[in-house]
Structure formats: structure tokens, C-alpha cells
Length: 433
Image 1 (tube, one colour):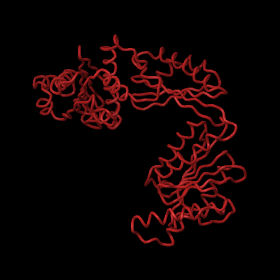
Image 2: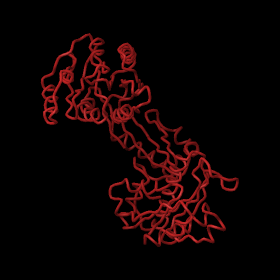
Image 3: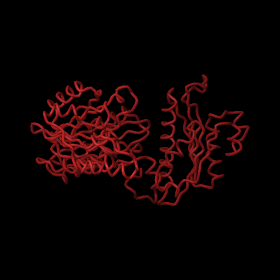
Image 4: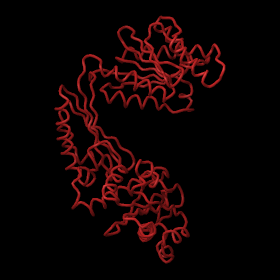
């Protein structure tokens, strides 16, 4: 849930400059991050453009952006080398010269002095800024950002190095944008669901969505195994927006039922970590086709050591027997990819790691290895709890990476459901099912 304070009709355009983006050498992560930050304060990004390091192309992009956006963001091409043409091109577009900023120059010189490197004239050019600009100082690098107001429209120019751009945005740009005149509150309320596809979810809540007032919009944000629902509300009173969206979120949660996880922007693994931490419960994993991905999802979280005891990646039948105690008879009679094997894997991990809960996954991730009886995408998942072992069969697709991700999410969701089932009598958490 995110409060905002910028006019709701302000529209932005982002221009990223660099041949390396257009040839696929690097991925433009700057635009995605900037769009998230701008949306969070109520500025809607209506266009994102990537252009080559050619002055004519940059001029065209600026001209088009100036005609359709209230504020224009430019990143990239501020380096000192010959192929970095952004500053020179901007000086032509804004019809102004370049000046050498003494504060920026001193900063660049100090960087070279600290590293005991000689400073060339090409490095001093990093301190050149547009005459008409306000310098956005960059403590993290040598290329400063610039804020230019041209024909009453702000243009914000920043380096393309992601951590430098983010520093300038957070410290110099976003606080200023929040204080622009004519502000109106914007509120985002995000909910998390699992175990139900986007289309089925949309059908389930269609009447609630259809009844939303004009100033509240519902967006579906799907990823394998999960769908986030985001309510975006605009109005005069932030308190009223919070109250309205919470009431709608309560309706949605009741309708979604067992597939509802939380009415906050969080993750399934965070919910599990917090739930188990509060109850001092321990978890272990036994993974085959997911190759340790479930353990990775858990252990990327701070504090995961308080709930996660360990895991075993048992690809071969021999490892399933030796590390988890799966019976040879089970493997021979039912196969490695079977409900029986998954259940024995979960029980073996629970016993051998001496934990309260254990997840086991075995399947055929693909793209090959399937048969008519056991096709690619077949996955069996089992979760051993304090009172029972639950197991379920899944049939995913042919994409190996997506199968691994969907299997991991499905396994965590099964754990979440079992945790709530076995502990719900003592649970008063808002996020519990």
C-alpha cells in the first residue's frame, strides 16, 4: 500500500540512450525501476523509448516526448568518451552551451586522487553541464545529473549506470517531484493470491470489479503460481482512499477464499518465514526437479536461518535412498516421479533434519524425459506436517524454467495451507487463511 502526492494527470516519458540497449547487450532495468518509483508518487509513465547514440535519433525522441509528456526523463550517454553524445545533443536541442561546474570538477578530481590515477582532459569533461541546467550532484560517480526547465517543461537527465541513477532519483529528484504544486493523493493497495490462474481469478471477482467506482482501478499482476491484485485510487482525501480500498480488499479476500494470502505487497516466502518464526517452527526441503530452488527462495530472506534447517537435492534414485530413506521397493514399483516417492521424501527430510515441516518435490521439468504415462511437466509435491502428510499432483507445461518456478511456488503454497490448517485455532493473524 503506497501513498502518493502528485497531480494525477501528470504524465511522464522515459528516454534511455545507448547502442548497448538496442543490440541486446544489456537490459534496460532503469526504465522499469523509474516507472515503479514515479507510479508510486502518482506520475504515470505513458511512454518508454530507447534510442541509439546518434544525435538525430535523440533529437527525434526528445521532440516526440515533449509533445506528449508533462515531464521527460533521460538516462545514458553522459560519459566522457566520443560515443557519449547526450550532453552535446541536449545543448543543441535546448539551444544552450556547456559550462564546467567547479563543484563537479573538484569531485571528479578527488576520485582520481584517491585512486592515484592520472586525470586527463577527457575526464575533466565529466564536469561539463548544460548552461540552462540545475546540477543534480552525483556522489556515486563522475557524471552529474541535470534538471532543465525548457518551455515550462522539466527535463531530468541522469547517468545510465543504475546505482548512480537510483541515487540521484532518490536523493535529488523524487523529493522535488513530491512537492510540485497541484498535488492530489494517489493510493495503491496490493493483495497477494496463489494457486489460482489470472483468468479464473478475474471470473471469480468479476462483479466486484464491475462495481468499482470510476476513481478506483483494479490491475492483475500475474507471475507463475501467483497473482497480485493492485487497487489504485485517486481522490481528494488520502484517508478516504485508504478506507475505500480497504473495504474493497476485504470483499475481494472473502470472495477469493483459500487462494487469498495477504492484503499487502509481500511474498509467499516472507509470509511463511514470519509465520514459522512466531511459532518457532523449523523447515527442511527435499528437492529433485526444482534443484534447490525452494531452498534458495527461503534462504534469500533475512532471518531465514531461524526457520530453515537445511535441504537435500536428490536427483538420483541412489540419493533419494541414501539421504532421505526412500525405499527401493517404492522406487521400483512406483518410480521416482510418484506420489509414494514424494511422500517418503518429505517424511525422510522431516526425520533426518529433525524439523516440524518438510517439503518434497519430484517431477519431470523437461524439455525431455517424459513418457506417455509420465509426461514432461508432471510434478508430485508432498508436505509433511505435525499431524499429517499432504500430497498433490500437478501437470505443468514444457518450459523447464517455468516448471521449476511453478513447482516451487506450488510447494510453498501447499506448506502455507498446511501451516494454517494445523495452527489456525491459535492464529489471529490478518494474513492467515
